[in-house]
Image (cartoon, rainbow, N blue to C red):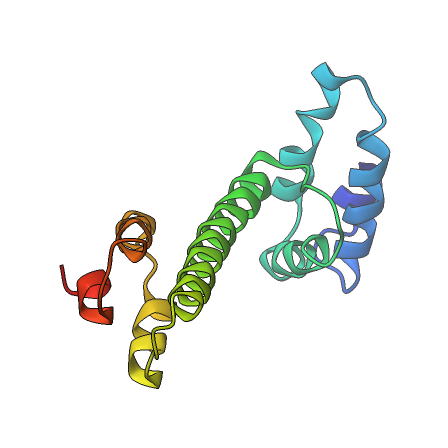
Length: 138
């Protein structure tokens, strides 16, 4: 912590801060939750930005509440995108299995859809549909 304070505005301060964050992570939870925000507050702007970039290259949850919020918002957005893409891909596979020819623009429309409820509604229509329009235009 003292090294972070002493070198907060120097080149490489983000590396010192990262070591400090690793060290405070070993403390009991009552204390380990307080130090990351203090470490961030000590750093200059450039070092703070560099530290954020460094932390997102590591395969673990960030320590600081500030960074943790950004991390989970990003993961949540990615999860929603992934779920929608998975539903869209499954819908296209179901259409293919039903024997429908799905033109490229329609495939793209389905893949671009990020509304999970809409994708679910389209998928629910696949079994009873007589045409592609019955699925997508109803």
